[in-house]
Image 1 (spheres, one colour):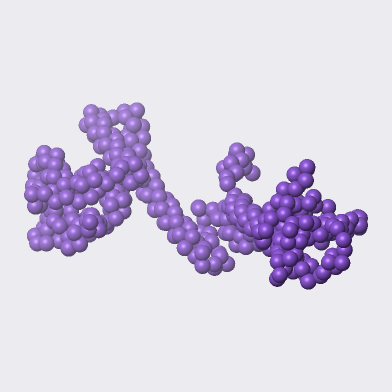
Image 2: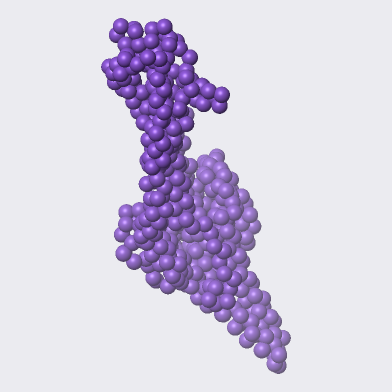
Length: 460
């Protein structure tokens, strides 16, 4: 029953589109986060190289200027305020200190506190002043080692420059992330439209009709799915046709004994002599047994259909099954004047369902007993097949006896159709086949059940 017909709505399962979108966005965010980290590290590295190179360039330039040689005493040059420049314009925060060879300060420019004099050259990180401000410095002597110059830059402004560079690299990705996410969602939706169409077509299929999936689902990824669904529909149709035919046969076979029982019961209600009454009662008993046989075959068929789903295959000795069935029907054959024999090796194992193989063997023997005249020779034969499997067949010479004028047996209730349908089901469950087989002399009729062998296992 569909929801439109009043049934409960189907539970909404996980969405493939949502799954793909979440995974795609997750990977995108991961890549973007990696880009942010790498961009920030790159910005810091480039800012360090840029400022260090600038410090070295300013120091080399000032070493060639000798403006302080004509001055008496140390000179301090205050910095003019320039609030209209950005804080990361690090040229405005450069501080320059010059010493002579004896360590006397010749000039001081900028806001840095006077650093201590050392003879070392190169880059260094200094902490100056009472506020413990961190500075990056580069110092260098002139060629005559008469003057030393140091250029300093506050580390805070260098870090601000690094953050600014990193932000400039990250910002486009930040703005593009929602746009890319929306574009990916639209692309996934558009790319999965064939899957949505296939899902809608599958949901609209009616298993009871001859409808098939259209060929418009011609994508390579869908070909096996469409072929499998159409194959299942074909099998469903074949099963429905088989079930309808079987239902018609069962209805026909049950109608006859039930109608006869009703007729004989009506006759018993009227005036009948003793012989007629006895015949009516006997006929009711026979018809009841006949209807019971049909119902028994139906139950057997139902058991054969369920076994494939509920029972696992196991090694079965087909010879033992044949011998047991013949032993069970020996009394019935003796009462009819028949003889029944088994021709089989000591044992022959096949993978299968012991219950179903027993049902199949009993149906073959029952058919031979019910469809042949009295005094028939019946043989149950078991032998290996060439492909590693085995076959079981039941042969009889009832045709020769009927041709010679022997009394024919009363037709069975299902006229062999129901029994053969059971045997075909058993063969399908085991992956084998069932049908008539060439009858060796002196037999006239043979029906054979063929069973495949166990699949070969890989060595090791």
